View: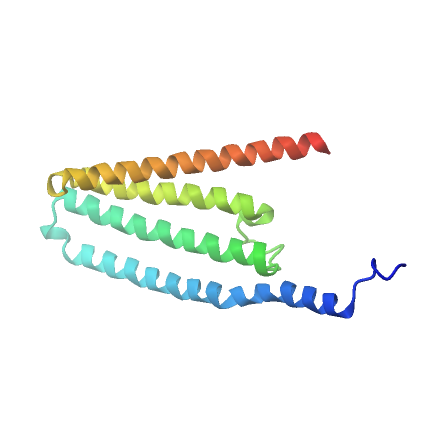
Amino acid sequence: MSEFSRPSNTSNLLAKMIFGSRWLQLPIYLGLIIVQGVYAYKFLAGLARMLMNLTSMSETDVMLAVLGLIDVVMIANLLLMVTMGGYETFVSRLNIDGDPDQPEWLDHVNATVLKVKLSMAIISISSIHLLQTFINAPHIPEATMKWQVIIHLTFLVSAAALAYTDKLLHSVSGSTH
């Protein structure tokens, strides 16, 4: 083995430091778990508020309150996907194989799958906001509604571009092997 093909102790140490740096993301994922607790509280508070005011609420008010609760659930799901998928993809294995509660999608998670799932979750959340806006349209400025539609369409185009790029990458990598 030549002197140039054998890694030095310095490069081994550097490689170990770089590889170990992934653990710096742990506090971020722990923070997301705390944020999930915040959303659980927001959901329960919103549900309690809706139940306490149910008799004085119109059908539209109930629908808007329910959509608000669904929005909180979808954001919590997004947080869960980022936490579990990000940790599994970028930090370390969760080692939950065989657990009956393991989410099916976690078996085949990678950075691309995670991006597509996150894009779909963001589009779903945006759809809920858009539905709330349309239901409450008489009380919302027209310019605000237009911007919400434009932003939603931007999310849709971005997700389609991401999915198309993923498809291209898979077709190219599949044909080269």
